[in-house]
Structures are given as structure tokens and as C-alpha cells.
Amino acid sequence: MNPDIKICGLKTPETVDRALERGATHIGFNFFEKSPRYIEPDLAGQLAERARGKAQIVAVTVNPTNDDLDEIMSLVRPDLLQLHGNESPERVLTIKAVYNVPVMKAMPVRDADDLKRVEAYIGIADRFLFDAKPPAGAELPGGNGVSFDWSLMSWLDDRVDYMLSGGLNKDNVALALTSTKATGIDTSSGVESAPGVKDLKKIDQFFDAVAEACLPEPAAGS
Image (cartoon, rainbow, N blue to C red):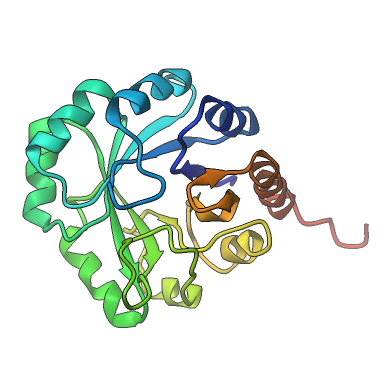
């Protein structure tokens, strides 16, 4: 089965179009103001129209207020909200009830204990995104270009549908796919030439690497 592919932190028509041309299933817009990938909601709304009906439009937020979400929902009309902060299960339920939109809850991972937090969100979050815990002193909750020990994913049971994130690029995405049960993958810094600057060639290389990793195994004796 081919994985969902989310390209996150897009800010230009050219990169949105290239991601769509290559088969992205999810297009992510980052509304965390400290991030180099931050985009104003009105501009994101314009870019979202290029993707609407072709890929899922994902609004990436960090501990958003209702005012934040009101603006994003009005201007961007996302198909999915990604909550990348410390949102409690109760807050996730409230957001889903108020805005009537599915939620993907991001979970930072460094060791097996971090996965214990997932239990409280099962049946509440519609999907999970597992990302590497940010390095000490980092201001960004994600997009730091670091990975974590993917073997930890074996601790999860089949109730957990998740995307894998954290330092994914053309060189390691095949290993990520073969060593986990991720139904989706998410990259941002892995397809950039500089923080917040998406690179069309790197986007192509990432999709090429995913396609190669998903080729069927040759039949025995062939």
C-alpha cells in the first residue's frame, strides 16, 4: 500500500503545484508564528484553493486559541487540523465539536515513555503524527530536521493510525517506511534548501525515493 505523503510548510504557488503534481495527498500550511515556515492565513487561503479537491488541506497549529481557529477556518477552510502543541484530550474534543473538522494530534517522541501519552487520545484524535522531540533549547515543536528511533513504533497497537515525521528526506524515507507501520509520511525541512525555503528538486527527489521504496519485491527466481 502506498503511503499518504504530506508536504508541510508550503508558502508559494510553485511548491504547492509541484507537490500536487508529484502526488502529495496532504498539503500543510504552518500557522506557528515563530516558525520560518509561518504563512499568513489569507495567503494560505489563496494557496489552499490550488489544492482543494486534489489533496487534503492541513492547517498546522500550536496551542491555537479559538480566535486563531476562527480565522484559519474562515480563510483557509482546511480539511484537517493538525494540533502540534500541548492540547489536552478535552481540548481536542472541544475543537472537533466547535469546528466540525477532523484532528491529527502530533506527538513528540524521544523514548518509549512518550508513547504512553497516546492512550488518552485514542478514539478522540482522528489520526496521529509522531515527530521527534525538539532538541534542548529549540523554539519549534517540529520542523527541526531531527529523527527519533523508529523501532519505538513497534510499541503501538493497530488502533493507532499515524503519519511519521521528523527529519525525513530522500535518504532515509525508505528505511522509515520499511521499519514502521506508518500509513503516511510527513516532510518539511527534508525538502528545503534553507529553513522555510522549499526546493523543487528536493521535492522531486523525495517523491522519487518514496516511489522506489514502494516498488513491489521481485518474484523469487526472477
